[in-house]
Amino acid sequence: MDLTLTVPDEVARALPLPAEERQQRLQTEMACLMYAKGWLSYGQAARVSGLDHFRFGLELGDRQIPRHYDDNEAAHDLEYASRQQHVAGL
Image 1: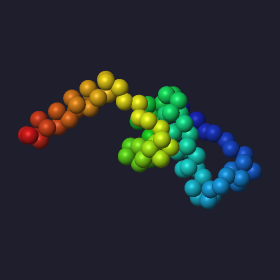
Image 2: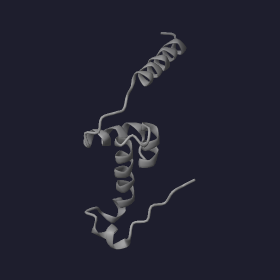
Image 3: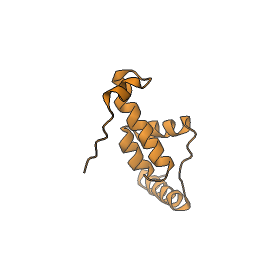
């Protein structure tokens, strides 16, 4: 299911953003807020923002929103890195 948010024209025009940037910037703001509240995972929020994972991380940093990174995620990342080293023959 896709969800569409309607912003009245007069509100959209009042935003201090160029018209061509409004959609992307609002998506990014919304994604950062939902991530900060813990409503979305990092990957989900990045998808909502329309940005790649790296750029979304930069956006979080710009807003001083800490990454939600727990022991399970660290273990998963270490396991993945280990598999990659094995595949690469390192």
